Amino acid sequence: MVDLTKKPYELDAARIAWVSQTIASMTEDEKICQLFAGMGAVKEENYLKGYVSRYPVGGFRYNPGTGRDILKQNTVLQQNSKIPLLIAANAEGGGDGVCVDGTAVGLPVKIGATGDAHYAYELGRICGTEAEAVGCNWLFAPVVDISMNWRNPIVSRRCFSKDADQVLEFGKAYLKGVSEHSGCICAFKHFPGDGADERDQHLSRSVNPLSCEEWDATYGKVYRGLIDAGVESVMAGHIMLPSYSRRLNPDLPDSEILPATLSEELLTGLLRGQLGFNGLIVTDATHMVGMTCEMKRSEALPRSIAAGCDMLLFFNDPEEDLMFVKKGYEDGIITEERLNDALTRILGMKAKMGLTAPFTPAQDRLPLVHCADHMAVEREVAERSITLVKHLEDVFPVTPERYPRVLIVPAKALSGPNLFTVVGGPARKTPAEKFSDMLRADGFETEIYESPFERMAKMPPEERGKELNIYFAAKTPVEGFVEKYDLVITLTDVASYGQTVERISWGMSKGGGEIPWYVHELPVIVVSLASPFVLADVPQARNYINAYSDSDATLRALYGKLAGKTEFTGTDPVDAFCGMWDTRL
Image (cartoon, rainbow, N blue to C red):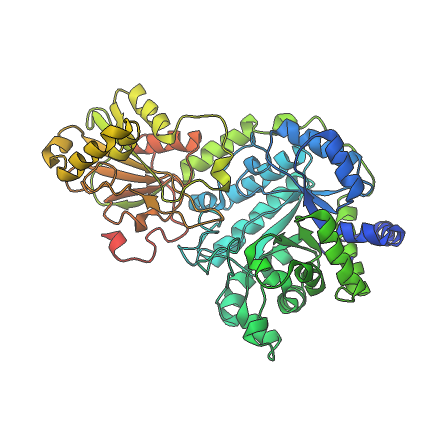
């Protein structure tokens, strides 16, 4: 059972009494509801009031919105919840994970590239401040996964480093920045560690293949350090750790090895027992295939609580999911002791945070969202992080006198629309268009490359076939292409997040201009504005830069470095060469 006098709670007798008395006063249905963190479909006031009245959940997450809209929503939720809510935000890279107008400081890999844990502290400070400003109090961060496999689709830009010591240092700095500047708590993720497999638990099983000794020296070292530093909660991932499952249960057959969210060996034996974590455990989203592929949902939800998770992230259908968990309790899968332990941890965290009665979040902190101080940090991180990974030619400085005519080639992702691109927003200038404007303002002549297929798509159908035949029958002469430009800048905006490992789509246009086949014909600079692993697909690049994001601050900092106005100071925190010998040539 949890000890509320110890870290991370450290409650006095009065608050411990509140926890016990509150649990004793709850109905069985209220207890079951507290085990869930829900997500609202809309931000309309009557809907929100009805939601927390019908489903008095323990936590909440929400769909994106402006800071003003999120604050309004959270105010309604907290004013109308019998027991105040833990309201979460994915504040991994800045306040933009809290609200759409928040400060995009930079995802963890960008922070890692600065080489300075001070910026991880600043990231935590800004995330906590902007989260609190809109009424959030629970950050699903820091991400303390380790970049062990460049093909991993989850970690990519969402980790500080390939080095466990740096991940721990930066994770602790983030935690300190949050705790010293806000009332928010953190949930580090994703236990028992992502970044080693190359599969995505959204879509399939995922396995951390390390031996117990390897795990202890890497992920285990990171987690133990954060637990010692007082981290309040942990997000369990749908990730297996077979080595420890077998060690802690030698009779366990392979067919019964389960991801952490369902594994008593990993949650109760390893995380709570061996690592000594006394805080709150929440699952990653319960819709992910890494969890749902293991057993029926009716079995998985109560099994997760029984294994040691205290909260379940998201309903599928509220009525059905609550019924599944309630039946699991009535059937003895969730024991009375385990239910009370989970509730004690949830309410103990709320007592620690002063969330003991309905309240109105502070309404006067919105000006802190994307304020001048936070934007200054964003600019500083951009300046410090941009990394010159590969430099085999004397191409700098990029000035109108040296390179009056510049071709800008935007390289796109291989995959089509996904969850994160379909919703979108208002039409905005592309990074290539913004960068072109910067160059033109300084006297360059610029052209943004348009592929033959993009051009053909605009033609009447009857002309496309003819144009295609002509294109494949005769390529553009090298001399004709080269004499038009003095420099080519390839801007790749390819990012992995959650669903697939993104790779560049060159359009299969062979002799066209987007594939840098011409690196020995013209000076070429390849810049990644997202994934740090693009070099695997352009090993021929003689000059390669990781900028880590396509924000305006980053584009301005990038231009300053190309022009020789500022130096490249970023250090590669991962393995930008992707473990391949030819990417260094």
